[in-house]
Amino acid sequence: MKGTGSSGGGLGGEEAGIALVGVHSDYPRYTEERGLGGGHLCKGNSLGSSSNLNLSGKQKPNVGYRLGRRKALFEKRKRISDYALVMGMFGIVIMVIENELWGAGVYTKTSLYSIGLKTLISVSTVILLGLIVAYHALEVQLFMIDNCADDWRIAMTWQRISQISMELGICAIHPVPGQHFFLWQTKLANKGGELCSRWVPYDVTLSLPMFLRLYLICRVMLLHSKLFTDASSRSIGALNRINFNTRFVLKTLMTICPGTVLLVFMVSLWIIASWTMRQCERFHDEDHANLLNSMWLIAITFLSVGFGDIVPNTYCGRGIAVTTGIMGAGCTALLVAVLSRKMELTRAEKHVHNFMMDTQLTKRLKNAAANVLRETWLIYKHTRLVKRVNAGRVRTHQRKFLLAIYALRKVKMDQRKLMDNANTITDMAKTQNTVYEIVSDMSSRYDALEDRLVALEDKLGTLQEQVELLPELLSRCITQHALGQTGNKDSNTGNTGGAGNTITNSASNPISMSESRRNFLHPESAAIIPSNPTALSHSRSVPPTLATSSSPCSSYQWPASPILPPISSRTPHLVPEPLHPSTSS
Image (cartoon, helix red, strand yellow):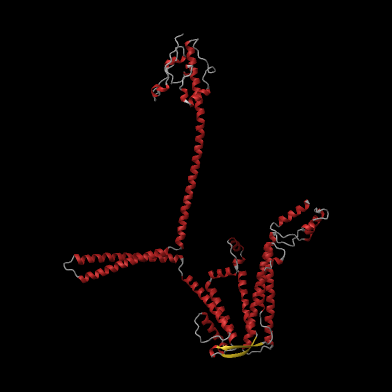
């Protein structure tokens, strides 16, 4: 079982993206792995099956193999599409030649030349049908590779089946060899509704649908487009969710070379519609027997003019005329759009034009303002500075004054319109760049402020740690100071020689380290006098009268503070009443 698991893991490592749609996978099935003894797995069978798979060479292809296979299928599909287009165009050209030779009376439908040409058309049609089937077979194979499918029937959806059937039906229509006629009866619109019946060969109805094979041109354009064949462009399109189809390729061509595309389309439509109109109408009306008359009718219909000198009589010709009119309206709209795009100024030209217009408007504004000032001065001159007022001249200057004001207003309005028209996409782009720079500056300042706040927070943390250590340091300093004072007192007592007044050492001192720290942290409790007045020998709040004559503190006078007055003057309520020492020795 371990061997089976390891082999399965190796296969899974080679093909990590195996799909769930695989039906005939190379892995042994669940029922085949089971043995006959109680449903346990048979180690020998599984190992044997895996060895058979390795020996037979039917391992699952990895991703690299699939990519190489996919590239080869792409190239093969492109070549098959090219061959199909060649066969389709070959059939159309032979069909046109055969109809023109028969229409000119070179031969009849029963001649060997006609049969030979129609046979070539039939052979090219059969080859074309085979190429179309091969093309769709390659499409199915590509679908199987892209989706890791093992059964080709998964790719055969109703949409694909309908597309294949439609293409085969369109490409299968062609004139068959032989002489086959039918009676075509119609009313002549240009001859008062006269009925006209003619024997027409079936080749007319079978030849016109052959132009539908031109859809193969769009397929070849798609497969040969750089946007479709380039891996980088396809990757970018996949990231942007763009479907590379014929519509996208045509839009790209209309963007790159719109004039060429429209010209080729309009000329091709004009020629094909003229020839088909001639084929439909030449059996009933002699005017349409000339190709130039049919081209005149198609051109007038295409441009939506319609003089009415030549009209179609059959329903076939009328249908072609309606289709031509619809195509003409669409092409006219596209032509107007292309011309308007070509006539539009570029970005640099717009900037130059706006600058020149702004300069001219500035000059006109100055001239209009100068005219207003001049006419104002002339009106004042001819009304106040002359002995005799000339009413006619004053009215003339007043009229010119009003015209100058109107001209000034018009120039200002033109300047406002120019400023409004200058607010284009370019200005929006500049505004966007300015806003982006401002936001970037604000972001950098915010980052700097954040760094300074972080540094300040670190300093505050360090300061807090130092403050927390300060009470311990102060208590240690006070203790050392008290011990130093006690040592000084001991030395002073030893020098005087008083045997009965010796002070005990620090070990017998009643004030401990904890009590000193408590007195430092709570000074209000330190002001309370204990029962032993000698315990406060180091406190400044104890008056000198508290110490007895035998106390060593009586000989020590605390100096007054150089900054603050004595405690008795600052806080008299904290100083207790003087205690008189006992009169005993």
